[in-house]
Image 1: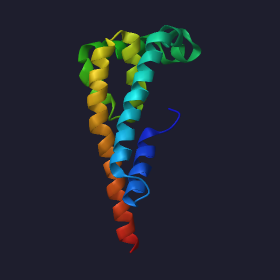
Image 2: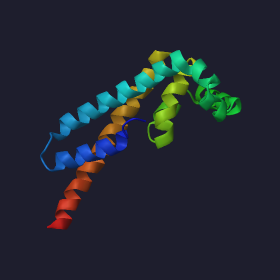
Image 3: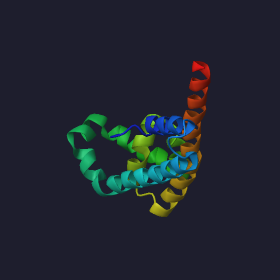
Length: 139
């Protein structure tokens, strides 16, 4: 939530299209950052989840929504982590809910890595293609 990851990766892809950064380095950094970011979110959910649920924000969200989110994650499991990677608000919420719900970290990590390996190159590649298109259009 601090830095919009998708925007940063698109800008990184554009920078790579202009030769300011190596495309493959950008993809590698993007994948590593995506994995680390969601792992931190998972751990925050695991450790702080109960406190967040009873906080002012947690009460505003409502116990019913918390329970539905946990139930949905338990029912869908790892694929929910993968799908959550592709939807902005879910990308921010799913890791924490996975931690709150008690999903085993090994299972979470496997799906987190798969999602990052698919998502990060796609977004950086989109930025790369957009950067090439912008300069072609300018010419």
